[in-house]
Image (cartoon, rainbow, N blue to C red):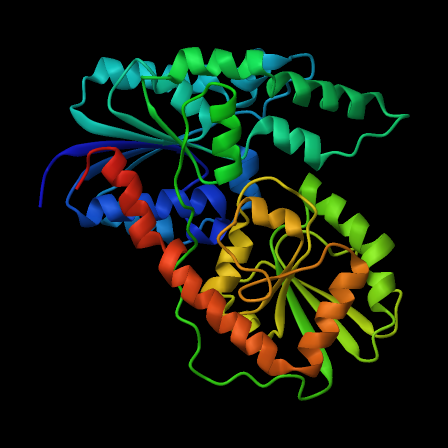
Length: 401
């Protein structure tokens, strides 16, 4: 055991039920506390975020174990007229982060390491303190480019496309490299993004992502007992990327699935989607909202369904389904974040509605195919994507043991 102090800087709060940053915050801080470190956490979480998310017991658990938590309120950025490096700095709230880092430096607290999640914190810390390990999220240029459709009659869509091009340009990334190279250990949880940064001159390693620990039910699954094929989707339907996905589903995918000779039930867990209505007799759309525990939903579903055409980041929802040992249908773009998965063995990729329909029919007619894929997916999750080993790699990079 030790009494050294570590600072963790991130967005959101420590809560693995809230995806991305919540998972990172909880498991990194828990691991540090288990090793005996004293931990100060600095979290950017505005009122809008705190109102939209349920704050559960996880933050209280970590505070009871010794976490000193500071939540920094912030307004959402509105960088409409900014481009290039200026857009990146404003969108990631570097000014807000720098103000907090100024206070940290003035306090002279004897931190043995600084761990950051989000580019704003990383930029603010670089050159001010050491050592710093910084994990970047999904790149803003990629989110702007793939999360918004370019429409000829929309000036806003053209502005977003130009902003995406400028923020992802070699000039902008070179500006980041000048600020970060040699001053931080920079990492991305998505191998394709890490390579993209390196190709433009920014030193960036790949760290494997992880999803929350779960214990799959030992009870046998009963498939299609009532003739209904149940597909589960977990994640917000209120984001820009999710709205784009739903348009694809309603306009192209579900009309194709309407020709299946059995009933398909799609169950949505997460915010949004209350307005969804099925126009097809054999397709049920059920929105469940937020659920504290997903154990029953995963146990009762036939497949996890996430054909989102969004080649950005590593899909946490896919890793979670893998951890439950559930077969998965996804869009091939997910492979950019998860190249380790073997198609047809641990995941099923459908490039278009016809392929997706064919996969669903095969899994309906042969439940053993899904069972085998789910078992294989769980094995790959235990091997590569469970939190203890992957968090340990982050702590090791910061010199913490």
